[in-house]
Length: 253
Length: 253
Image (cartoon, rainbow over all chains, first blue to last red; front, side, top):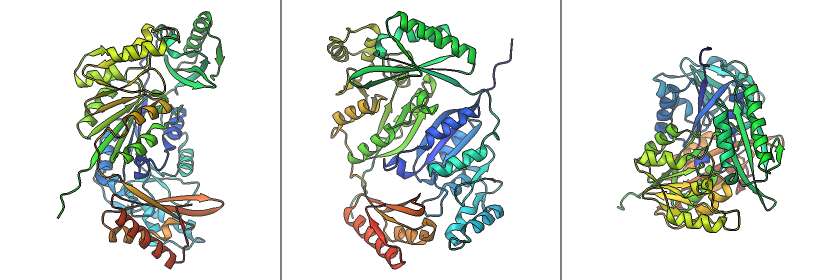
């Protein structure tokens, strides 16, 4: 018998009135989710909250203890509505301080862009005890404090920060997935899906219906950390669908 | 003196492994947020969780007491991974039962589509005491139970359910917003934003920077429930920006 696999987990807090008002379509959930999976870390929960001090404090304290890693996006810019650093410092019970390295980064970045004003210096403020996450896209760095990773809200800047964190966080085995598609109403093959999942412990099968080109179809995603098990489960599902008279489209539709 | 305005609030639980794995880009947060605002209801919090019974029970019980309305999306289809109804019934401490009206709807819908199988009948299951939300796009209805609204995960089906709920929920004054844009780094005008917001109590100003066509710019969104106040705040912001030498683009860039 092998020891049960250690599963590494994460949560994400998306901070921003612009998401809750519907003005802005969030892009960070899917990019952080995909990135985490490659690191062998499972994203278990996301909370979207507004630019509100109390809401940030509550969410940070609820989630940082519960998961191995906690990411936040948004609210670390130079304007009055950027309150993430202050709120997280309050959640942690530490002071906010100017990080000398962040100040030097910003100073260099803004040297040819009008200089380091007081507003820009706000982006060098960190909860005491933090380290920095490199920002490859613009001047202001992200911030790491213990298991908390404080990232930008603008998706391409977040992407650069994730890139600089790649390979630095301990994780387990990534969840592998394979997708197949079928021109079938999912309700017609619900029994096949359930039976196939039951017969392959350690695999989950998700069913994602769609209506396209005037026809009903569904994609089925099989997930597992075990590549052989995944392959067997997909093969069994394909066989059952084909036998039922539903041709399978490998890779999905 | 007028009494303080009653503010109506809502939360949303997005249920689905496919969102947390990064496979699927959520579209329901922004569409439900925008719709709620038109109803005069503020979306205060979103949680994204997996197809996990305990996680659903916990989130439902945390949020249904805290906000006027609670919406959920996802997990109400015919397959084994559709567990939302059972989990919400458990959260409420009620049984799951077949709703006769839902059964009749499904029966009609599937009459020419292969008949009402056992899997399809799953979509007539509701927490005891529920009423139905019309589904104008396909057979299976949404479900209302008290202040909880259980909606589909597929965005165009959710849209149809929202449409049928339009005007039926009590709300307050909607948040109005106006956007202007400027080719300026937000850090250069952070003081103007903060001072303008301070001078117009009841308005919030959000700053949304971007980098486009090789240039730095930002859009500023002013929000208020008071149309005159909103207009004055926008006018003051435009004047301050123009005086600083930054031409304003009405409506945003």
